[in-house]
Length: 160
Image (cartoon, rainbow, N blue to C red):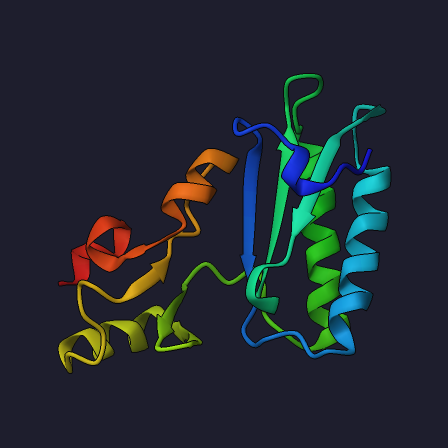
């Protein structure tokens, strides 16, 4: 059952899918509509899941799931991954590659492979104070407070 993301509790489970490029003005409403339609029918063992989404910076798809009534199961998570894969194919982008890093460079968001990120660190093009997107956050509260942080406050710190 779809619910607006901002109404989900701070304990809601979070999945973040960083896009390899920004969504275009034409793609954004289509992706939003398809995502809402998917979440409207998303189930776990026949039980409707209370879930919402947000698309920050036209660059990330973030699912939130209120597990207080029904938790996600392996099958329901597989279903969400298949949905994300369908978006990847339809819009020719990458959303599932966990070996990529997204970070801010001024007002721009950059998406690089982990190897390229390490190279930028060595060249000092990226510093400990560069704002990175910590896509390992697990709930809405962490998403709000720990998603956009200086690199030294996230798992990225190991590269400095």
